[in-house]
Structure formats: C-alpha cells, structure tokens
Length: 232
Length: 385
Image (cartoon, rainbow over all chains, first blue to last red; front, side):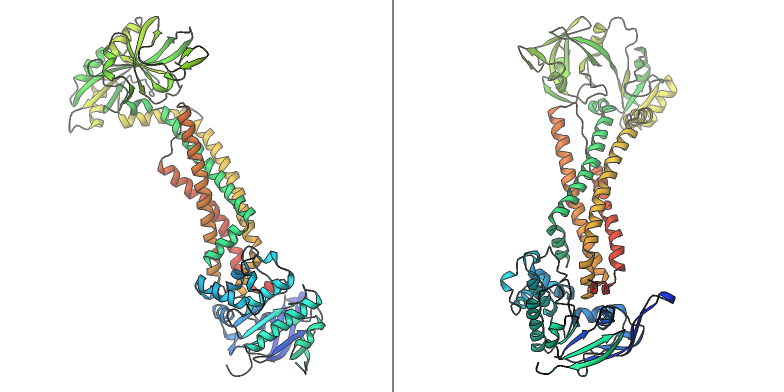
C-alpha cells in the first residue's frame, strides 16, 4: 500500500447534543506511515481515545475525512469497517482484555478464528506468535496465572498474530510498573518495525515517549504539535 | 469460534455448574412431577387396559367412571347378548370386599369376578400359576404387589409374600391363592383379588345385584361405537367403547378432583423457580462476558458470529441440563416404582419432548435477552478502561 497508513483531515467528533454537547475532536489533522511508531499524548479528556477509536474504525467521526489503510472510513458501511478491522488492525488494550477462561494460546488465536481460520491452524500460528514475545512455554496456561507484564505480552502476540499493517494501543503501560512498561513498549516497537507495521499508541506515560518516532501532543480536541524523536 | 464459545462457557466452572444444576433441577421437576401425575392418572383406567380384551363396556347409565359401580341385574347380560353386532358378552364383577389375614388383620380389597368358562376379564400377565387355576375350588388370584406388601404373611419377625397355597378369609369364606398376577394399582391402592363371577355370589351371598359391567366383543367388521350405540338404544344401559370408557374415567377424575391443579401448581412452581435461576445465571454469565464480546467485535467479529456463539452456549447448557435432570428424574421414578409398585411413574416420549423444549426455551429466552445487549454493544467501549 502506498501513502500513509493513517490520515485524517479536519476530523471532528462531538458527544451529546445541545447544551450538554462536548466537542471531543475539533478538526484534527494527523497522519502516520508504515513502520512508524506514533504516540498520541496529552492530558485526560484531550481527545486521544476518541481519535484512536475513530482511526481504528470502532467509532464514527462527525466531520472531516479519515483514511485508514487506503480506505476512506466515512464511505465504508458498518460491515466493511468490520472487515477492515478483522484483517487490517491489531489491538492492544489498557487492561489486556484477555478471556480468563481461555488458555494463552487460545486467546492469541482469537483474531485468526474471527477471520475464519481453522482451529488447528489458528492455534499453530498462535503458538508461533508467542515466540517473539517470549511466552511460548506459557501457551497452555490461563492468563490469570501470568503477571501483568506477561499478560500484556500475550495481548501483543494477539495483536500481531494475523499480521495486521496497523496496530492501535490504548494506554498499554498504565497497568504495568515502569520497568515492565518499558519492556512491553520496546517489544511492541521492535515487532512493529520488523513487520513494517504502523503503531499508534495512546498514552500519558511520559517515560515511554522515547520509544516513539513521533509524539503528537493533543489538547482540547486538537493536535497541537508533533515532535520528531531522534535517535530511535 | 463456536468451540471457543464452549470453552468460554465451561472454563468458568462455577457459573457453568450453577447453570447446569439449575437447569437440571428445572428439568427434573418438569419430568418427575408430570410423570408421577400420569402414573396416578393411569390408576383411574389401569383395570380397563389390564384386561386387554373387549371392545365395549356396558354399565348402569348412572355409573360415571370405572370405580363408580352401580350393580345391574344378571338378566341384563342376556339382553346385551341379543344385540346385533355383539359377538360375545361376559359378566364382570368389580367391588370391594374385606379380607381377613392369618394374623387377624383386616384388609379392604378390590374383588374382580370374571366369567368362569372363558375367563375373559382376568389379569393379562400371570406371575405364578395359571389363569385356569381360578376354576379350582375357592381359588383366587391376587396381585403381585399386594402379595408382597399388604397381604404379606407374617413369619416370626419378618414377612414373606403371599403365594400359591396360602389362604385368606373373604367375608368369612375361605379362599385359596392359586396364582399371582401383575395388575395395575387402583386409585385406592387396594389389593386386587380375582375370582370367578359365580364364586362372587358365594363370597357376597346377600347381594341381589352383582353385575358391575358387561364386557362385549363385537363381531368382525362391526364398528364398536355403533354396537355401543345400539346397546344403549335397545337396553337403556350405558355402553362405551374401551377408549371411550378410559376417556370418561379420566375426565371424571380430572374434572372432579384437584389433581390436575395441584400437580400443575407443583410442577409449575418448580419450573418457574428453576427457569428463573437458570435464566438469570446464564444472562449474568453473558453479561460478564460482554466486555470480551466487545473486544471480539472490535477485532472484527460480526454480530452474527457473536449471536451464534451465545446460541451455541445456550443449546449446550440446555441439552446438558435437561439430560441430567430428565435422566435423574427417570432414574429416581423408575427405581422407586420398582422398590414399591404402588409408586407410579409414566414417562412417555411426549413428556420428554415437552420437557426438553421447555428447558431449551429457558436458555434460549435468556440468550435472546443477552443477545440484544451484545448486538447493541459498541466496539468503541473496549477503549474505556
């Protein structure tokens, strides 16, 4: 795919109507390319999560244009957006969101099963995806038996198992201690780069900013500045 | 993903067992109570089906059901035999008699007097002896269940079943057991004593009218209903086909006793309680998994896939719970009935089918309620911590 992985122009989003309306995005211009790690940072309520939700195709914006993986989201139907997410986007969440009753390997296999992959093949690929995150030996244990850092690494394996060109992460280190958080983000960055994958990370954890290629600072529904990191 | 759905379900062991146990309980009540009810209903017509021969039952017009005997004159038998379409007509006595046991105890029994020539009206399944032995002097046949219980002979500290060669007193007349037979319990669970119609007159000499029923076989090709109608027209007696008489006896008990209402209330309450617990637990289970369904939705699972996952979970639960409950109900019912033949249990396939549908309905309704939430679920919610 040529051109940016993610691009939005004049993106707006308002919650509620009338006097209670809250304008979460006020004309955001933003783009990210393949193999790039971009962090969206800013205070709580600045619109980071709303922006990443719209970019991930799980929420509709109100105005402006949003282009993701070559598709103009505003022109896609709900089913088309679901298909785009299924094949094109990997997710890493703040609270891991692993199914506690499924084994680590089964959790990682979920995106493949959603794509319609056969169970045996999906589990085989899931086991392989656990290798780079260093958890191949934990394939059959339940998530509850793992530490927070290990659970987030399982979530990373789940996000990459179907080789999506775009990975979106929502506060991936907020439930982890500093050292583990750094390890997790470092791992995420290395995996994304090795697969030429675009990595969007929403965070307010300034300690992980150095792992980004660019840091987009948001406030009050706008991207105020984009800072390029050097030395990454 | 359907296998994953089942893994999600059974993986939460405590909730899974909770729902299965609740459903099993619901199914147990739904099967056991109506099966007992059907068994009791059989008491109201078991005597008719035990005989297994005869197309038309003739009786006094005032008789409302099998146990509501209004004796007729013996001459009615000859009148019935003269009706066109009647192939044969046999007398049948059915009434109560007091038996005195060896130990001096008295037991109220049901006595059946059958035609001594043809032995039509005798029990269908003999256990000891032969039906023809009834022609022996003072001969009686007793039902096996009572032989081992209410008519059992006391020997030292224990009891033994009454058997061939034992005797009892019937209305101060000696009667000798010449056989035992399987006989459906009657409504009052009284022992059944078979003898010949002529010997009934010996046991009950003071009765002027003894004829309880005339059992009629119709000629080949004749319509039993038409023959019954002809008997009624010509004699003024009530005549019903076998099925019609069963139906009449059943309807009387259903319409004039509180059985249906009581059993329906009992089974209904059990069902409601079980259904509520099972439904609520399954609904809660799906609610607890709502976040995971939201994650799957964000990852690209369509609503259809999630609906199928929930339905598979519901079906699996329904079948497991119903299988356990119905199995336990049947095992308990049949085993208890084997230990004590007076306990009755009937489980026709229709009851299993209705019970199965009801159990599945519980989880399907709970699933549909949960599905509404899952379908409406916004995938963006997964980004909220």
